[in-house]
Amino acid sequence: MAQARIADASDPEAIREAARIIREGGLVAFPTETVYGLGASAENEAAVARIFEAKRRPRIDPLIVHVSDMESARRYGVFPNAALPLMERFWPGPLTLVAGKTSLIPYIVTAGLDTVAVRIPAHPAALALIRAAKTAIAAPSANPFGYVSPTEAEHVAGQLGDTVDFILDGGPSAIGVESTILSFETSGPVVLRAGGTPVEDLQAVLGRTDIQIGSVLRPSVPGQMKRHYSTRTPLEIREISENYNAAAAPRAGKQGERIGLLTLSLMEDASRYAAVEILSPAGDVREAAAGLFRALRRLDALALDRIVARPVSEKGLGLAIMDRLRRCAAGD
Ligand code: AMP
Ligand code: MG
Image 1 (cartoon, rainbow, N blue to C red):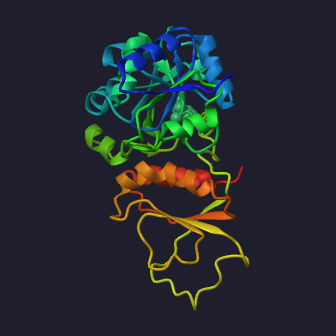
Image 2: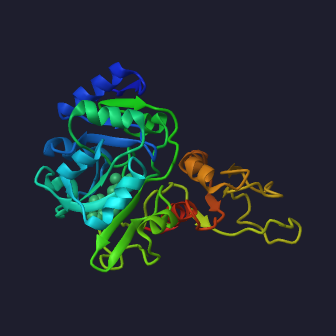
Image 3: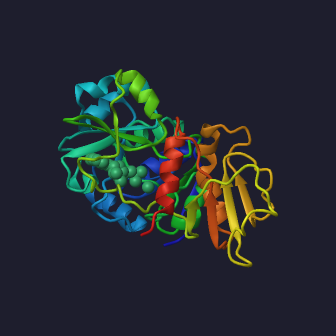
């Protein structure tokens, strides 16, 4: 297949064209506030099958369904009462809620589950596309399965440009990490994936501090795979003292080894690293999350021997950042 066309996501004509492709069963990569999505009509089994093929994503890994308003959310999902205040407060936004599936959603979307993951994205182009397509859009991140998610149209074009039909370019994603996924189990709310909506904010709205993190009930929920969001370059998480003393410290690695450093803020002496990515000079985790995947991709493009990532505090978006780094660091 030829290289997909890329069009400006703020151009109404491009949105109309993208919506036409979705309605006809094609694949459109589009910007959201979290990362770029690889979208197909959620009601079209064959189109959804193309998503799995394009990403080489296992069919056991369910997709998130994107809708433009509450009314359509309810056409596709049956939400527990406890979810209502969260929908009011966080939609549109980076929160995905697991609901009962209605018959409009084919099982290929949910990997055979009777539940469906739904969210309203907070991006004008994503919303315009969903409205114009007149259907919900099933969309995982627009990257080959297991690799770092795309936060720019160019990332999509480079990796999936010959398998998608059309790419909407909306500039860099503002949040930069995927949505938080929340499920309501009989034992209470469970965060299945830390993401763009901080758990502290969920706690505040739900008025409870007992939100579980990670599905202990169903450790094998599809998509909770350990190694994910991964660079090809091996990555390890390691704290490095700010007062690093080059003369006294042991050698960082083998002779001639080229190491990349991923750090929240500037270090006093980073001269022994072949490349350094500073996520937020001011130490702001929101800024760090927004630039995380771009930084990982940049380091991964340098053919380094390894990447050392310094841990960040797991408050706010720091939890999502550390989740992505841990999964990137996990062995196969
Ligand atoms: P993404 O790869 O960003 O599209 O996120 C999809 C992830 O959402 C999957 O890998 C699952 O972890 C989660 N997910 C989607 N649907 C469900 C569901 N019905 N129940 C539980 N988790 C789900
Ligand atoms: Mg993904």
